Length: 150
Image: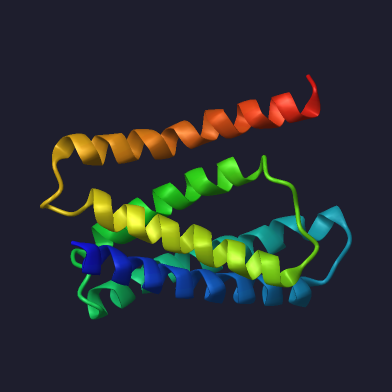
């Protein structure tokens, strides 16, 4: 099981770096400072994200993380929770910090996705993992509220 989770984390971390690089190029390619181009820019990011999700199924299958589709979908759900929880974190100006954060978020999502889809894991541990990920969002919101002084 640890090999499967580790392979999923490594593949997803690499895909996270690729996602970061392609999204950065897409934003640079759009290169506007007006609200009028926000919809096409976000559309490109959504297309990149969906394409990478589809490609992750194939990449996970190639390294022996099966079923790749279930792991990729679970990882995508975890990644959404990580992204929402990450809004409470301070922003960085360093591009290197953004790459590391993307790799860690995608890798962590891949590991959790592989863990919760592993057949050998007891149901209570899978439920606990899912509940812990879901709990990240309200905890992050509470931290943001406390930090803002409201």
